[in-house]
Length: 433
Image (cartoon, rainbow, N blue to C red):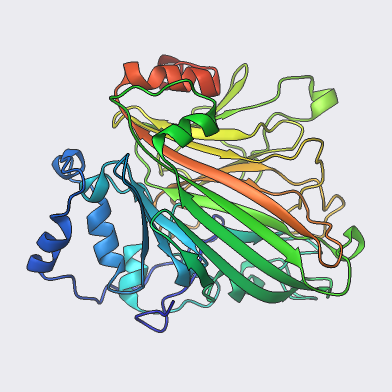
């Protein structure tokens, strides 16, 4: 697909803050907005009444700058918006059709600027395809011999400024492909093929994927699954000695003061499994923002304090999520965590003693950085990674992630939360007290 503006491509990282550029674009005419909104979709007015951005608003906005592919589940009236120009990124979704709440965070200021930034382009979106490692001697964000500082940090063009090709498309599924080459900090070049499939799920299929017997009729939901395949197209096998890549899925969501991230973990002694959570990315997270209890980690998603956490393969399960108690929004991220896989790339900005002891699940809360610069969003993130990919020539690996948003009252959502996370709504609401 082609961009409607030549400089609107890019991605985002959770550890870099830039001052976004000034606003300079025209909006749709009122008559066009009314035409687009008056569809056969659900005319639920929850999002409008709460003065938040609707799915139709966000899709209409983006269409002034990029082509948007929309998927729809007719039985559930759910929608998903995807941008091929942004590496097949899921930009946003809705459980209530065109006039429902827009779940993905979108950086409208950067879209309006019609510009391309040097180090990274922070366009947002609730699931983007990325690659690791970010730092270390096998980094793909630093060139050989440079310092591990912000001045020398550059997002690879492949995951920042290059579109993916549309291989096929139906009303409920789209498949993207890309062939590319990347050279890491140590000088090894990866020749790769990427295939990314995004499919919207019916409510029935969602229940099956989550292992739930039923969902209350009062719950509205949208769910999509991405199947991401990487193939070694080169003649040389990918080995630890020259560095490995990982597939890295990151989702940016709209924050609120009432949003709590919930991550179940494998219980056990530190001597056997290591620390429960890594909170050293941006400095130790205060106890009123990160609480570790039996079975579950609670982490604030209020967008008011820049912080990040991660779980090792010994501690991580195959699910993470968040709950917004004020708006009744449950977000679920589930992925295929290979059994017994222990090698995950390390993204710390340093020459590493243990380059394959990285995290599997990460969560990020945006906020004002110590420098006092403007926050990226604010927003919050949920992330998952594949193992380090030691692929022989011609070999492929797959990373699958399911993302779901449910809206409903506490009585309806509580059984789902208890079944998937092992805690109650009340436990989440009182986690920091």
